[in-house]
Amino acid sequence: MTAHLFWGRARWFVAGGWLALHLAASATPALSFHADDAYSGAELMIAGAFAVFEGQLGWYANLVVPAAVGLLIARRYRAAAVCAAVALLIALDTLWLFRHPVPLDEGGSPYLLHALGIGFYLWVGGMVLLLVASVAAHVSTRGAVGPVRQRPAPPGGVGPRSR
Image (cartoon, rainbow, N blue to C red; front, side, top):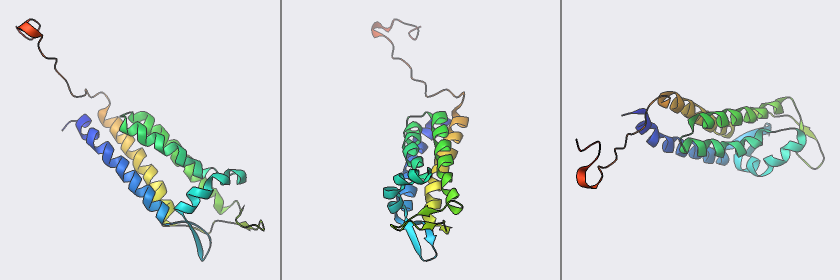
């Protein structure tokens, strides 16, 4: 099987794998600011956009990832790898929450990140999956010629293939 045929099918499985990881990340605890309290990925998906007011940009990786998925499906593997890498770097901004306190209640009490939950690892894992698959697809299809389509002979049998 040629690289183009393999990645022609595999890119859909990678996109489906990312979606499964993203949905699982939304349903599981992602960040814990207290020892007994954790925020799910879905809660963070809703409220995360407002974290920019506290200097946190990690949520904005969610805006770049769909571009990486779309580019992967469109067989633009290099651009998909760049978008996935940018999304991963933006997502890693979340780790600053271990040192940078954020107010989580109406009293403005500062809280530091206590622990990362499985949802965080699933979320980042989806981005890593896209990055690795995009790089592998780019490397394996670089310089390879896609499926060759032969033109049918013109009517009357006159042409280069009729000889």
